[in-house]
Length: 105
Image (cartoon, rainbow, N blue to C red):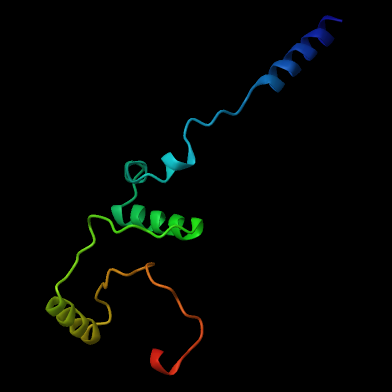
């Protein structure tokens, strides 16, 4: 009888335990949390962009985004034409068209 009561007590004690998460989803997506866990600032930016795309919110421009003058944009486009590996700072920020058109070649 004592073993049975002990088993019932342990069983109900285990059932009462809850898995309480100490961190919310919003905290996991914060820039500080991502950087503090060893990821780069660019990774934090990409995660926030992806989250905004999934939720359907238009992503806001961060402080790190450069706004160039028209003549600077022309020089950058020329340099990007010469060197396709140059970062255009639009990674994950434009709509991808899955159909090929004459002007996309």
